[in-house]
Image 1 (cartoon, one colour):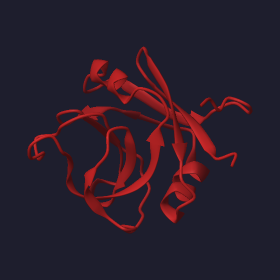
Image 2 (image 1 turned 135 degrees about the vertical axis):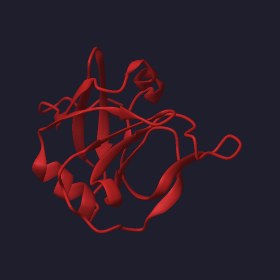
Image 3 (image 1 turned 180 degrees about the vertical axis):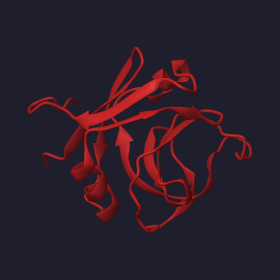
Image 4 (image 1 turned 135 degrees about the horizontal axis):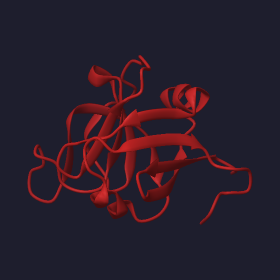
Length: 131
């Protein structure tokens, strides 16, 4: 499966993510590239992407490296650890999010990103997919 690979650049941090085939992921993919300013909430980065989409199988507890869409804030989210809402070792969103993909490498690199950092989501170059 070829998949939809995107590059996430936040300051000096560059990572790749793979978007799912969900309806929400398709809307995001079609809107790329997206430029914004990162906001942080514990070990989560989120930012308004100006896309309105309804929740699609929303969940509050997510996995390390999940990429998600948060409908109330029209925000793209990158989860790389505990948030203020987490209980124990879980990774918990503020409220239900639609998981749209995953970071393909080590998601903890995003710990170096601070609020206000410029962030860009773009399609990775053809053949840029890595295992």
